[in-house]
Length: 167
Image (cartoon, rainbow, N blue to C red; front, side, top):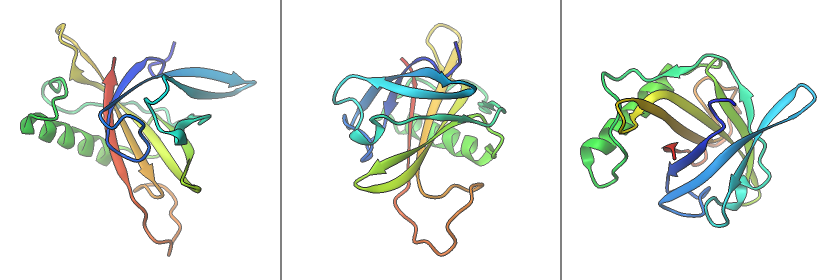
């Protein structure tokens, strides 16, 4: 079983979601010969239609390790300190990422337009309530990323970030 194969709760209010507060899903590893990919299993209404039949392809091999002094508290959208801490941890993780960072990539059909999505896992970032830490899932989508090949003169499109943790 890989670290990705887990039940996740995603906190995000973006067009890619079905439920605007929390989406629950599971990543399931599949393979065809030497090609490995993940599919998302979720209950109806938990994720928006762009995720239907989406193949998430593993890329990179370098884990993205949490750099904070202590794990993040459980998510609470009403606590500004918690929201700030998550924003800081996500920004730090994305800033430290590179093309060698372990991630899952896919292409989504959003209202007839193709957009990429990248799922990063920041390891041991969230307090699990039992004296340990669990991983933080970060979802980025759009058409450009700091170390990706961009379309030169292409106009920028909406970019978003979400986050979640193991269920």
